[in-house]
Amino acid sequence: MPALNRLALATLSAVALFMILPPAHAADDASDAAEDAEFDAELDALFDVGAPEGAAAGSGMKWSGYAELGAAYTLPDPEHWSRLRARVELAGSGQLAPRVRWKLNARADADAAFDLEDEHYPAAVRRDQRRNLILREAYVDLGQGDWEFRLGRQHIIWGEMVGFFFADVVSARDMREFLLPEFESLRIAQWAARAEYFAGSSHFELVWIPRPSFDEIGKPGGDFYTFAALPANTVVTEHKPSDSLRNSNWGARVSHLVSGWDLSAFYYRSYDVAPTLYEVGVGTASLRHERLHQIGATFSKDLGSFVLKGEAVHTRGRGVNTLVAAPVPGGRLLGLEKTDMIDYAIGADIPAGADWRFNTQLYGRWLDEHRSTMVSDRLESGLTFQAVHSIGNELELEFLAVSSLNRSDYMLRPKLTWKFAPAWRAVTGVDVFGGSGTGRLSAFDRSDRAYVEVRHWF
Image (tube, rainbow, N blue to C red; front, top):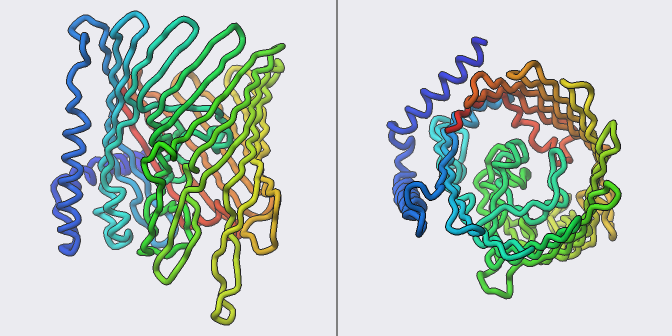
């Protein structure tokens, strides 16, 4: 595969150049120096954790992780590198007592694309995405009788459908590459206290999040900036709730297995992990996180030839953008109207022989109160289709298609995974967006890309 080899070689070369080349613009020197100092301080603080008490040699401490090189090339004019990233993730775990365990997981990225393509990306985007350091998990597990407690930074997953988040309302996400990365790496953990009670076929869960994490959406001018209509270099102010305990998130979830049906229901009171755009000025915009009340349910059932599953969430407190008349003739301004809404998805996992798997889903959002000036219809719905074909133990072909039923809005994602050694994996594929230009997917029409990733686990 000559093209794949060239792309992998370009990735390695670009990462090396990134480590030795000076900044492209002198005007960014002060910002870069401050950013470097902040990154170094975060790195020192993140890894200066010492050994947990009692975790001496032979105590069962385990370390693992992976290193990955990834490259992506955006195809529409102007063509450009949109990812030349080196990533390392390290995880450690151990046992302090018979029912006391701990886990620590951190990840660091360096992306050369945002220096090599300095003329394409605004300075704010380059500073935001060229380096990243995140503490992914840091928690202690405690057990007492039928209760399990987890304290610290953790992932809390209440739902999982293909391609989108529906009942998975607790997780924050890194949206700087939209929903294209694997969900495992896309999720941002929460600092939380969680209590779980197990009784036969029932499971009860309580969650308290004193200091919520929110979606990372990047900066205007990024390839997949959430509010794609905002021009590059727009000064965006994101208003997040203070750290007061009055702004805590909390929720409860109960699950029960009955006659083969895996059923769950939950209530969650939180600040929305996704920001709402509520004010747009000349070269400026403001975002805020709204207080939500959410009631949801999930189900799944193995029906023999396929697995049926679904999720639904009723949300109160979220606003929907509207278009209102501006004082300038023919102009339009952005407004905001609150309405209850229901998000839902129903799908089926269908195996076909030993080598094929299919998944199809119908998803949508229904607005309780709708106005003609809203940027979305009362009922927005769409379909997803996924086909996965295994070729032996090394190769896997996958195709994912997502399409709106309201407009010509689509996403196509063919990819090939090659497990060429026990601890190695290579992935290559293409992400294609298109449509009428008024939908979420077609907004990224100029971000079609080809990519390759090589990962080694250790």
